[in-house]
Length: 93
Image (cartoon, rainbow, N blue to C red):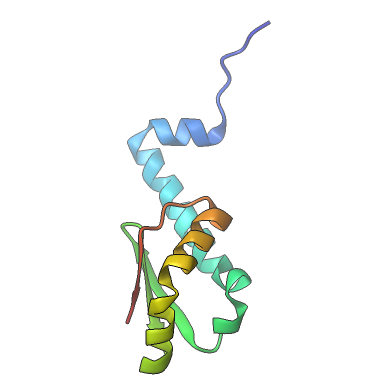
């Protein structure tokens, strides 16, 4: 017997309100798990917010800000792969 069962993710993606809820859940997961990926940054950065697929991160000093800026593309790729997200940018503030 063939079923048309959908995954929870498929159901969430079909409905706009639920799609936004899924996005918020992914953002929360990124905030909670960020230092699992980047443990070495724990004392240097703080995630301020995630909004419109952009992560806003405050950085301890301008030297680190510059270093992280140069690593931004790699960081975005790691985040998207690990969390199955669609982060498009990181803003260092």
